[in-house]
Length: 247
Ligand code: ADE
Image 1 (cartoon, rainbow, N blue to C red):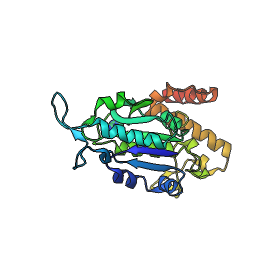
Image 2 (image 1 turned 180 degrees about the vertical axis):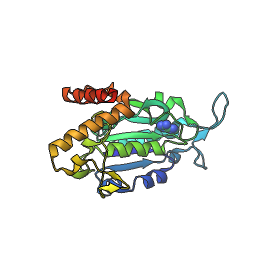
Image 3 (image 1 turned 90 degrees about the horizontal axis):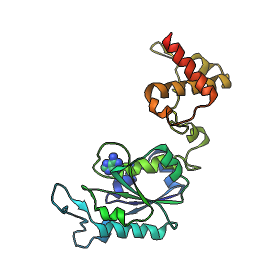
Image 4 (image 1 turned 45 degrees about the vertical axis):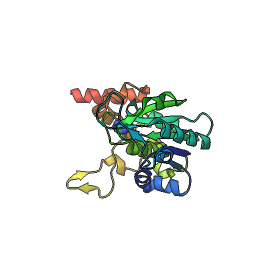
C-alpha cells in the first residue's frame, strides 16, 4: 500500500515512522511513503504557501493552489478515485473501523495541514475526500495524526506483523479492549500471575482472556459495548460478572 502524504515537514513524518514493525515494512516496501512538499508549488521565491485569513484573526491559512497541485500530483501516481483524507480537528473521529477499511486500499492520499488550517476551498474542490480527526484536542500540525494513520493502517496489512504479533487480537479489532498480559517472573513484589495462564490448558486460557477482555471493556470503556453485538457466551460471561459485583 502506498501512502501519499502532503506535508511541509516530511522529515518529522519519516523519522517517526522508521522504528519497529512499521520501519521494517517501509524497508521491505510492504508499505510505501510518497511525501509531497506543497512548498514546491509556491508562487514566490521564499517557498511560502500560507497567507493571512480573510476577515482578520490570528494565524495563517494554507493557500489553495500549492495544496491542490500537490493533491493532483499524488492522484497522478495513485489508483483512480483514490480517497483523500484531510487531517483536521473538525473531522470525523478516526477509529479502528477506518483503519480496517483503509488497509484494503492500494493508495491513500493524506493532507497534513499546518498553520491555522486549510483554505476551505481545498476541501470543497477535492473529489472523494473526507476530514478526519484523531481526537478532540488541537495539535500544531497534521504530521503526528498522519503518522497515527499510517501506523494503525499498516499493522492491518498482510506481512507487516508476523503471525506472533497478529493484529486480530489487538484492542478494538473485535470492538473490545484487549485482555491483560503478563510475562516473567511469576511473582513481582507479591503480585502473582493468574494461575490459569500457567496451566497449559489452552481452552481455559482462551475463555479467561475473553472474560477479562469483556470485563476490562465494561469497566473502562462501557460505551464500546453499545456498539457491538455480543455472542450468547459473551453475554453470559458478562452477566455473571455483573452478578458477582452485586454480591
Ligand atoms: N491537526 C491538528 N489537530 C488535529 C487533530 N486532533 N486531528 C487531526 N488533525 C489535526
